[in-house]
Length: 198
Image (cartoon, rainbow, N blue to C red):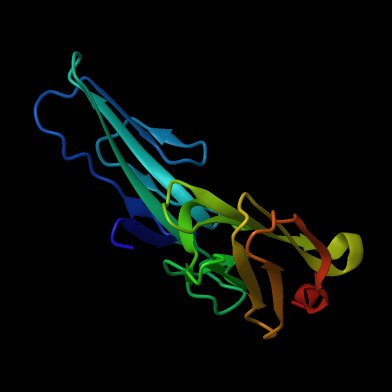
């Protein structure tokens, strides 16, 4: 994705305000609770996921806002997942998630990763990036029952196959919905028993 910037956890990035003219107000927001009023702040994220950077400036009468989204991946990945427009990487890049959709008329395609989410959850769209179709979560349930869990929800009656792959072990789980059927919630608390072996 051309509009997506990339970084790794702990990587110090310098941001530069290139505003021209008089700047009476400046505020950077880094989506992790940190802010700055500097013209060239340095910031590093501690957790993987999508992070939006917002710069607001004003000359006192005319405000202006710029936004950039960063995909931050783990500096020390737990697996080999490589994020792209159709692959979501979760739990420090250990779990690769993809979605294929199909309708009842023969149409089909790949779900597209929405630029929002955390280290354990993400979203997919099918037709329009602003219309989210699937939420998927891969959670560490090792302390509770010795498994990595998969939860999901969808707001569609399209058919789909969600594939979650543990890139460290090769284990694969698939979750399906048939075209024309309202999608049921995914609550798999026994998805990956080998996911607790680190």
